[in-house]
Length: 450
Image (cartoon, rainbow, N blue to C red; front, top):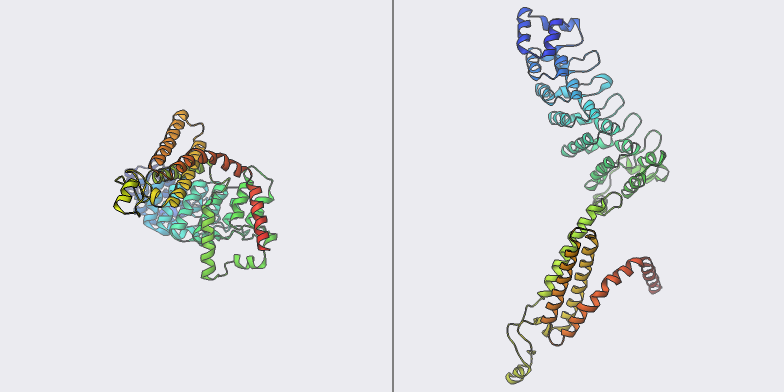
């Protein structure tokens, strides 16, 4: 390349470029004969956007040329992270996004290797078909992102795969027949594995978890074949939860289905429902304990609020007048039971139903308060919180005692004061002896069947 033109390309001064073209109108044409590198390559290295725009106006064909390293200006800009230059080149011709350079890598491949998240979005917005392109080793951009530990790049690529509905890209195999899941298992990338498996929640057939590579290994085999590391057990549990198997465990039927054999709509809907339920279950090692605690705390507070409200506002409302036994005999209305203003109507008209509500509601409230106490253990202002819970339950106890009828007052007092005090100890005992209780229930069930 002419030294003057090289200096102008490095500086990025558009005025100097115009001056050179006026002095030598064919200076840009001579480049094709003298050098593999053109001014657009240089400007893409230095990041001079205005210079790039002017070169594209004068010689748009420069955008398709490879330099001595087998890279187009788009490749260079993508590697260096020049979003504006990549966008300008893509606006000239979106097919520039799919030009293959050295080792048949596209700009998207290089952006995935380097983790250029913004570049990936620009390239896929201009040319979504780019997502399926493979290099000389049959690797997609997704393969390369996972292989180079570029989690954010992988996250963006998966987002676009979902957006353009190209889930088939997840199952593309490289020259060794490794899918992206194989690579993620080899690199022990738990976050990537969880993102990939997330596609199966809505479409179980979108990701083949038991695909085998040229060595006959599934993703689970690849994970287990290398020395065990911290976190391997959790990844294994995650894979197994969606039906991942070792190659030796694959039956002919499962292999037959893993290559994409169709299933009936009924089978697909059942599998989809099962996967969705399984996905939302709490999984130890996958879901952080802090999130589980927050969810449990919200549930406990909701239960405490609902049970307290029902307790002090029982179904049926309250009597607005007072009726003594003398008044019922005097009027001859024996169907109306004696009552006092402010007492629960259900407590006098349907004592059994009211007794059941008091019992189950009090148990629910006391258990929810125990849960809140456990989940907020070692929180700041712990003493104040304990006082709040004690006073709230005392208010509940007093309210139920006062709104109960004469025949249910003693029952309500005993239930809210004594029985529910035993609930925390009962729950703790049941938790500690849960295995024995289950075995006992199983034995009783088997005897009753016989």
